[in-house]
Length: 232
Image 1: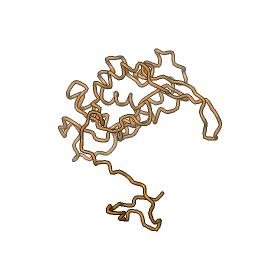
Image 2 (image 1 turned 90 degrees about the vertical axis):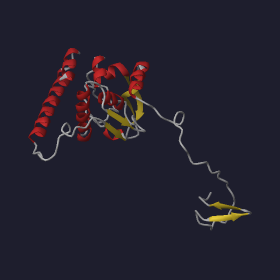
Image 3 (image 1 turned 180 degrees about the horizontal axis):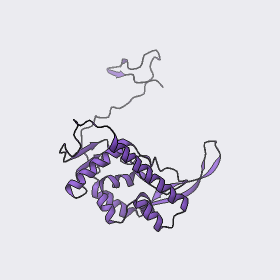
Image 4 (image 1 turned 90 degrees about the horizontal axis):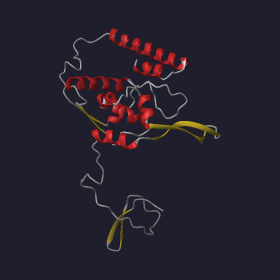
């Protein structure tokens, strides 16, 4: 409904507005079907299990979260319909955030928090910082995109190997402000700040040998033994 109200305020076209209204009705039907679905009364709900914290490893597995947009003909926005798995994660997180009255209760851990689309940055904030986003007046993807993403058109090769103009989200804007928001929730670890034991580098020596020697065979050259790892 927030998307529809924002669209009305932006003098959105009647066609796009009708599209959002249809999406709203489809979501209502989906929620009603979930409510009427037969349930196993022996299973407890998330709230009844008294879970007070979630640590989600490989959180990129839940990046396909649904969102609404009035963008048309823009490539690289992912699947706005999302997945049930991501929706269930959002419901669980909202339960914890309601419990604490703040953007708390869940930690995401991932080596690839953003991998395919710029939408994934917005979805991270939607998951983890809903109250902060509301304070900033950002209640939809389009409001976030208007603030932090830049749409551009460039000539690209199409599937038929012909040149065509392609519209997509090209880069971020207002990067300092967005980076500040990200640093509020992110603890980035890499080689520069994470000291862990690593295997020592084994020097590779190229030598001429009998090509009949199979790979991974140990050969002796002089007083040294070498493992054949491949042939040149």
